[in-house]
Image (cartoon, rainbow, N blue to C red):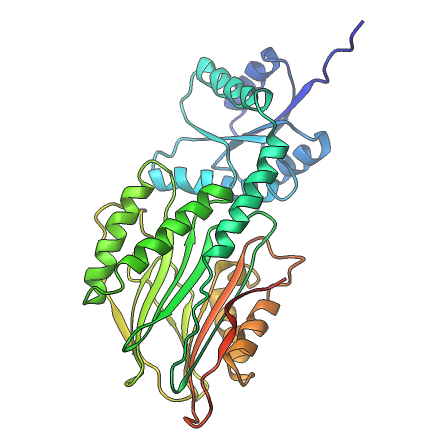
Length: 382
């Protein structure tokens, strides 16, 4: 006699006992062995212990937010995750899906709806080869992401420019881009929410669109035109893009910039001070019809503009501690590339859970020094 397939295992993480019991009964009828937990931390341990195939996860838990639980589960489990919540705000939905959930159900829900969603997820695994497809997706996404790094040499009298990028285990949507202009330099630093090929393709679209407006006069007008195009491409994808875009006038040192939800750009001054550049609005694609307004800073001799990704921020408990570390790294090294390498070292490869990216534009204090550009223009760390 052929052996029967191993039972499917589900973990229900839900603090409401009535809803928890209903979920368990539905899943038992669908052939699952069910473990019930009422909070996030015991739910994480249950998923690890039983090697769950499916997790139903409430967004509002007594000990931690469901999105954080989802992030931690994705560190070790490839179980299907269905998030349940009474919140109807669209941004909550995007946040949940972007952090590893496979599906999302609003409360109240019907047993039939839950069964249909579960069966749809498991049909997906029977009709494809998920491991092979996922690996192929990562390989192709990685190639796309690598192609977004700038290859053009930048030779700006009195400035040095460097960047470094280290991908994490699951390819994301980080990229940076720069190119020289008659007046100076344009710089784009962005992160398309999500992982894999989807995020890489959104990043590629963003880069191409930002380059297409390079000749438009006025930063606000150019960014508005670009964001409208990007939003049209994002429509229906459940994603958005955080972005920092700047234009440098090399003669004056004036930097005009727009920060769309990135929030991790800093002006490091030669006198030992540092100021974080505040975002001018939400990420591109988060809310339709958003208008972003430009701001300015002056790069004096010895100053630097430093932009890092949230893969660096994740190492620190607060933005203030990140700012202090960036300040120390910038003032403690004599070249832009050395600063980038020091910033990369803040988030060791073995512990980083996200792409780690950094760009430094430094105005030289000594104009007699030659301008320096990081090796190969854009550099990928091993």
